[in-house]
Length: 449
Ligand SMILES: NC(=O)C1=CN([C@@H]2O[C@H](COP(=O)(O)OP(=O)(O)OC[C@H]3O[C@@H](n4cnc5c(N)ncnc54)[C@H](OP(=O)(O)O)[C@@H]3O)[C@@H](O)[C@H]2O)[C@H](O)CC1
Ligand SMILES: [K+]
Image (cartoon, rainbow, N blue to C red):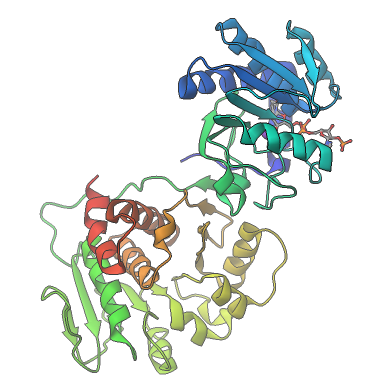
């Protein structure tokens, strides 16, 4: 799993490396060399224009320019301003070529490397600089960002000025929150992580392929996890969740429903009773299609089993403190999150963490940039998911997959992360014209790959 550090945490990690007798220039040399290596592998020997800013991001740009030129690549460098830091001055002094001043006359090149600003960006780019940056990037065939696309705030995903779409972003030591937060994440292209020898042991990471517990050859259906779903007024939604839970490998899926649900596979058992204190339940699932039936949520909260609470279940909670001691995972989108927790300041991960602490629940905060937050401070950031996931019923499928992961024995945070990853992978497999029913079936393939 790739670590994620905020700008401040990155500066501290850099300082620890410096205290352990690595110089900033050494770190910059590794960063620029890593950038050049990634550029060369990704795009091959294409003429390059490197735009360098005044700080250390610009310094990385000068180093990369030198390494690319040493590989025989045609490189031009245009500077927005003179280097302001000692390390950037050093990097520029090592670049033997010419440095043009970035102006309206600067000519484009087939490849653009943006080393204007990185984690030190404090405000949007000035108008003239922004126009030149956008003009040159629109005229290049391949755009590569050094550390971050210039204009993207490091920690929040916000764009402080206009940011073009990049093909690749090469970052150093750890990813930054904006590589995985909307809207900045969708400007980064592929995010490549170069090792510069700093240690990052963070609580935040990018969600990767889950490690699922191996199946016991002698295990029975309860060992593989019993998901018990509680239906409400619109049983189609809980049917999608139940199918997804079964396809995600739960050994047994049961649905308590007051009326028979059409179209459920025969393997999913329908019950007209709701014994929620059966100790064999690995995960209780409530909320999809619940509608105006808050008593079903109240019943679920009397159970000692782990639970996933989604959709109307979240709406009926009212007070997040009801979740304390419940071993719950909740899966709100931004509207549900705001209704449950009210206004919380800060970035999306800051808000999700505050919500997790208040409720003692693991929170899957959904959106174009889904994140998972745990009360102990861990945050998982989903890799980009296909845009066609935004269709009816896909949230029900996610809740079902997470319930299956929990019932299969993963702890709450890991189960939520695994569910989010499998959901995105299943959407890629199901393809752009998928409906939620296809997504539920594709979970099976996502697990097998
Ligand atoms: N952290 C590490 O381990 C390493 C990081 N590297 C690279 O360094 C950058 C971060 O470098 P830093 O110098 O801190 O910041 P930037 O290069 O992003 O920019 C800072 C300079 O830019 C000025 N500034 C900020 N915003 C603007 C703006 N909108 N317009 C004009 N100028 C701006 C700022 O000046 P101020 O006077 O405003 O403070 C600074 O001069 C990181 O992203 C990596 O790429 C190292 O190379 C290796 C180790
Ligand atoms: K940059």
